[in-house]
Length: 472
Ligand code: ARG
Image 1 (cartoon, protein in one colour):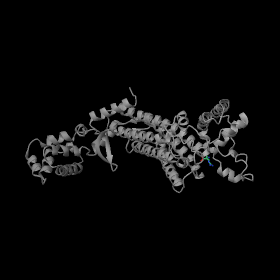
Image 2 (cartoon, rainbow, N blue to C red):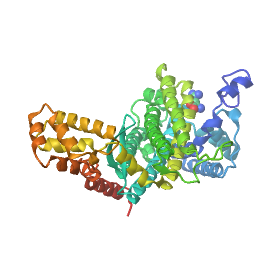
Image 3 (tube, rainbow, N blue to C red):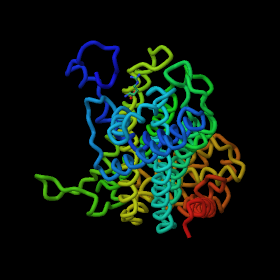
């Protein structure tokens, strides 16, 4: 009643009031709400609605409220429904009826969108810092283990040797794209809806552009109907956040596998693993598993907001209030996940020997030898068959490819349908040529293209990433 003025005849139903209140969630916006109102009071001054002493009085009152919010001494009242009404009522309590002028030409519809945009802008900037911190942890790990070779997998089957650093830099690339998506979303977040009013535009002749500038927005919305009901900027940010969480989840998944004794590639530090309540032997990678698990919540939050929007007519609908819990939760989860994975990565111990054993076990240099045959004029498809026969033979004998006899190699080429291969099978040097190509060093050196694992290429990418991230 005290909130909605004279229109409504009865006291609000307690259950309905509690059902509708959003203070427990949107209290998160308190600082931004006050910041928006301070700028708005100044805009009312420019528009001639408030005299200069009135502006100063209101701004002083709001500034004091903001300090109380920050130190936690603001008296919140959920029966006032939301953060906006709480701030307005608190201002009235402090400065009297003058506070009633602050909402001239403003609606909570343009106000809440403003607050949310200010909050998101800050949050995106904080996420960006968090992403870069994780990138630094990955690049640091890559630099400490610049020569370590690991098996790259496709289909979860060992495929080719790569530098461990090359694999870590793949995650850095993914994170860089996340930064780009967030920066792109931020451009559309950072537009001022203030002045849209409830739906038709503010009844006060505000200088919207000046007001936007005062709040650090890069522009103003161009249609009041659109602006009051638009939550695209929430969806776009959530989509970028969800994809970033998917990326963190994939990194987490790899850490879970690599740290399992079956792989044994890495060891998580004692500080980040947990034991078991029953099994005294356990070292469980819980932080990585929880990042993986929480990515699911963020994906659900994105689809929840899309579903909330899809049936809404234009303009503000109360359904829109439901954007905040999923948005706030998702941003919090991403920020925490970035921080915790940064700790896990920074403390990772790498077992280069175990990785090297896995490389040696898996016939991973076969395609390098096929490429070397192709260098001599053999059709790649035929070379592929020759190496296939050699892998089968090596497996039967239980030896590495490079340990096959010359006779095996000559035989595998001789069985070929390709005349070039049969000719090579007669020559004396072919076994040596193939053995050279079968070494891990040769296999690593061969993908010497931009983005390939050849050590020179990886070193160049590592240097670029380190420079970009300001690592000395
Ligand atoms: N608590 C509301 C929200 O979060 C604020 C806007 C309310 N507007 C209104 N016309 N009831 O969406």
